[in-house]
Length: 400
Image (tube, rainbow, N blue to C red; front, side):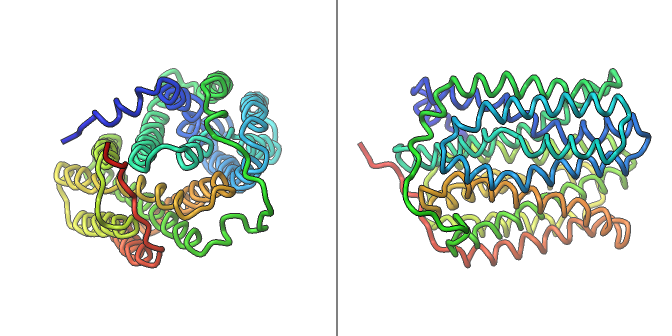
């Protein structure tokens, strides 16, 4: 049963509630930009290949720049980056739209896409580092990381829905302009919410050139994050394949919802509970759950039964993401906190993108069940890798 009492207690701190709410708008572009960029370029240039290439340039730049930005924030604090990057990202998106409307060469369009990807503001990494560095008890931090997982999942569901709304008016370019406005307004609200002060002080001292990657436990935790991202990507391709096979391509949205809603609910429930098992063993159980359900879904032909299986599978996802973020926060020393979380998101997204590419090839080559079968294998490998991560326990708050 979902008990919201602990969240109400957490949000009795009005500033903390304001920070969490203010963080949503500037992160919404994460669910909008990739899809709207692809569709805008395709509609103007008449080529999905060019659209995909430009979108890939944006995502690659985002992935490469994020760890570097995380290191900068750890060394200078988030205030030095938040507004400059927010303004630069909004301007880059506007320039990208103008360039596309002017039908500039694809190579020049990629330059603007690279610029937009390199300047995405560091909101998510700041919030996660804030939870990790706070003086709150571990039980409250677990609630915070659970909320983070739910917020990001909601963004990646709502983002495409917003793009679809603009597509009704055949205006994917306007979706990018909306994203630019959301970024600009969002970073202003977020900067004034108290989040930059709650992030804490810059940790002084000598830093290793590898940053958090010097720590073996962190490296192994990041491999688990990659495997989790890959299994998600393969599952999403598997859902698309199932909908297409059933002759109802539009049903893929309902399959995503069937997967995501239970994940969000389970993530919220997980945030309110403490378990005796170490975090790596909790994550291993989640990976096994995902692996078994993915394997079973390869044998399902009914779309309704497939949707039910997606819902049951999704119940493991929210807790796995929350446990992953808690584990990484505990394995990382304070001076590398922000950079560690950016590495996690970067590798997760890289694996997700690679899985999309491989999943399509697997479906065309081996049939509709192949992506889900590979998702099962990847999640199973993730479960084994979890056992190689140092054992860390989420300690409950002290009784009062």
